Length: 427
Image (cartoon, rainbow, N blue to C red; front, top):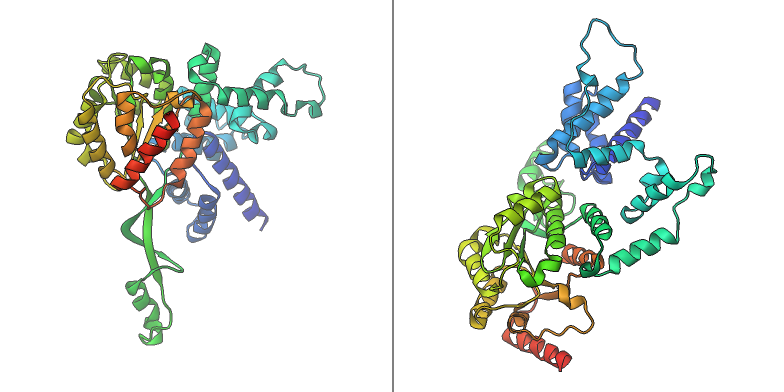
């Protein structure tokens, strides 16, 4: 019993190490892992490794990081206190080679005490700076996180407009964006899985289970539809009118692209450019530089209708399946044809499950959607939200989590009512 409790403790600590290093591990996965270990020989290193890998790893691109952390925690760390064997080559003592971002996360986990590990994302940097300035002989009770300064500075940064950020605040905002966790609403699939109580009888399992009763149906088993996250398509404006927000919003798109499984990203000015491959780079600064080098119409004019026409003609059938959510980020300043924009917005709304428009100017209390492009697109938007500070991005994340199977009302009457509501607001 004592050895079992020790093993559960180490599994929990290993799961915490994976979470701190960027691999999503939750309590349910650890519980399932503990039940699975009863079915294998844990003294077999291969079985133990593949069981942990299948239970705790969800993304294939994080396989290398998982292997490095597994070797460190279960092999290298346990051998540090053992006397060296002069006749063996100690290959496990080699330094872990990780990307800079992952190495930073691992260092934070290994060097931080229990108190710092419980800090929230926004408080972590403030706590480290405060501890570095304190004297070495201060009492341990004085090392509690500052309740006033840290929270107030974080609140001010979250509410401050991206347009008025200093260079230091931009770097702080990038760090906060990089540590955000994103979850998109789930959609039911046609595949089914066994459950205790479901909507569909599992006839194969029913027959197998009741063979011991002479084929009498005494035990019933059930199935339900599997659920998967919805695809997300992001179309961002990088024209001249969006130049004050473009780079920070690209950092935001990079965070979402690396936090969700199925994300397609596009940017446009006078033409549409797909940047999904460029955003696959692990380092966000390298990804943004690659995007700015690839996009030819950066900080140029704006033709929203033509960009959406290209998307609907060339990309919609490829990326808008399986109940996709479309996220358009633009201020609505358009120099193209308003009739073309109206037709393409109508087609795009009917092709996706939810159409969300983020406007950085909407965060201003004096803003009114009076431009031709914004007035034309407004009737075809399901959710019209600001994107001018960190708080607005957090609210967007909560909205994405709440998306369900119900589509918004998109009848002509509902569109006319939406236009009347905005006309009353702007009059």
